[in-house]
Length: 121
Image (cartoon, rainbow, N blue to C red; front, side):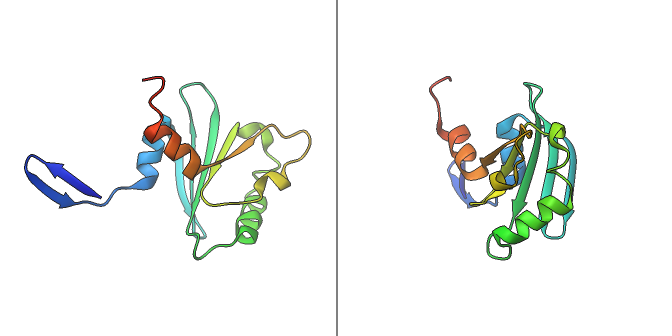
């Protein structure tokens, strides 16, 4: 990203994971890197419990994501999370059981909304 400081413009890397956590207002409780997936667990100011899964879209398929999700036991621990954020198109909603209450949210859509939606500002 090109960042201007005074009259000087520099190219600077932006940490998308940290920026997304900040925009959500997430209180991070745990951050791990598990078999190619960056996993963040935390809580929003509203009290909602959140799971965030980042993955390299060039290296992982939806099938890889689903296997990882099931292997970690997230589907069976429904009450643990209210929202699950994942980057890239996915089919995690298909793993949801009738009694599950969590909702899958695409990181890209939420990131854009948080960055540019100024209606309530």
